[in-house]
Image 1 (cartoon, one colour):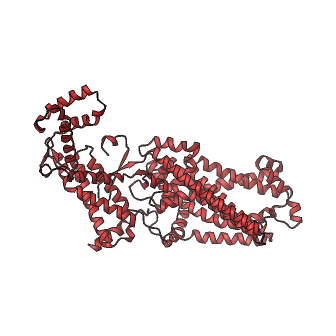
Image 2: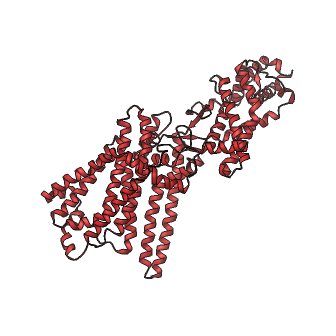
Image 3: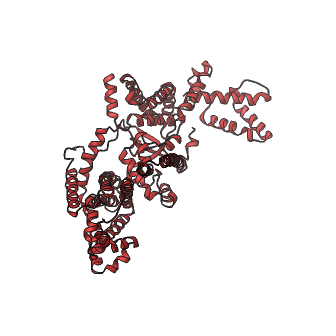
Amino acid sequence: MAPAARSLDISVEIETPEQIALSYLVAGIGSRGAAAAIDAAICLALLIIVGGSLLIAASYTGVRQSPMAPRSGMWLMTFWVIFQFAITWGYYVLFEGIWDGQTPGKRLMNLRVVHDGGFSVTFGASAVRNLMRVVDAFGVYLVAIVVALTNDSRKRLGDIVAGTFVIKEERSAASAASAASAASTRVPATRVESTFARLKDEEYTVLERFMERRSTLDPARRDEIVAHLTARFAHLLPHSAESSSRASLLRLYEAERDARSSGVASRSDTGAQREQHSIVALGLKRWNDFAVLLDQAARRGLARMPAEEISLLVGRYREIATDLARLQTASRGRDSTSMFYVSRLVARGHNLLYGQRKRSIRASVNYMMETVPLEVRRSWKPILLAALLLFGPAAIAYTAVVRDPTVARELLPDEMISRATEARAREKRGEGYVTIPEELQPTVASTIISNNVKVTYLAFAMGLTLGIGTILLLVFNGVAIGSGVGLFASQGVARLILAFIAPHGVLELSAICIAGGGGLLIAAGIVLPGARTRRDALVENGRRAINLIAASSLLLLVAGTLEGLVSPRVWPLEWKLWISATTAVLMLAYLSLGWRNSAYGRVDRSDASDVHEKADAAE
């Protein structure tokens, strides 16, 4: 790609651990939109395929008319609820985490998500940027497009909070350079051995411009220019009739183009400019060899490469990084195809060698058992504030409805009011707050879990609205809970609803407060950044908040299971309260873990040190 063709591209410069300024091409909105469309089509196809398969399986079990057919159908429905949730919320996080910042759509469009420092994106950062889609997707992604157009890195809100951006990987550069190298081998030996190209830069520019436009020129005008150029370059052209002048000029142009591609300097170049051409001439073969090594390493993976090959790759990476530094010094700010090509190679090598550490099962367990509970304790202030925003309105609504039950009609849906009205009759018949057939309980449990987790995700993402959305969500949920319990209490059947809430209530309400605390953390990064910049505060608080979402998701997984399988059972209230107390003790025990995690707050960016240690050992 020529420098002129890249003038409209947006680039971001970062400094690598080797102290090399590295330039990344920022992905445009069009290519990101195309990648998103591909991913959306894949998700839709998966839903159609799985949904159709489940319908066929359900019809098959119905045809068999076995006693287990209803139960089998409900388990199929349960799987469908879970699968829908996984595709909607987990597709992007899973692929970006496993494929080093790429989804299938991004891979087809040669795009990749990376951290602001150029390091590979982590699962946590991917989770942050994708949960923020709740806000970015408003107005058919109008919010995302507007925000991306207002910053140089083309970041949407999710990228700003996660500290990531999307780059465009120019893998075609290697083949272009290889072609240039091959072209240079076709140049006559006498010219390759020459110290200089024969044309000055401005002369070559004039000749190149004519060759690009010659087919569009009027014949008379073209002949006039040919005569002028032939006279100007007469000392470089063989004596010939005018009819062969165009062919002579074409041969001169091709020879000069190939010479410059091979790194030969022009006669007008001096000092640093001549040094730049010398670097290209000496390094071109090494760069192309390194591009081949990168392709091989990307296909095989570093973990499968022997120490000797990794040593070779790391050694070449260091050499190419040094070449890039020398080119940047020699170019003195001038754009060049060679520097662009080497920069892309170093960027690819940087991403590969400093790629994300493969997260093991043990590391995932340590994260959930140490990092997550430690963050919950660290974030007790925003969590406490979220609890006040939930339980304060709940207490007020409870008091108001107990004193005047007619207030409930302004606060609760008709279904809830009807259930409270029938509660006394249900209690006399020995029924509970709600009756769920046993075969439906797995489906109900999975639906409850997915809905509650969506609410916590929304509370987290609404932190971007300066916390207003998070606050409103907590207040509205508090009013609904308080007025519902208050309505049953006004009817003298509070035991009925308490028996239903008790088994899962501690975990569910705690999860809502923890997720609300995550949303308030996001808001604090915007409103109260302290000594940090708002962007840095937002990124840091976003990394902390995603740990709170992990905690709330875990609690809701257990709470939803209890709500679907245990809460509807008609057991004595005392039994349900014992279950509630047990869940509270277990939750507190879980949240007390993590004291040994001395590496708290560190971002697991890469396994580059392991790669370099392995390379050094081989050397």
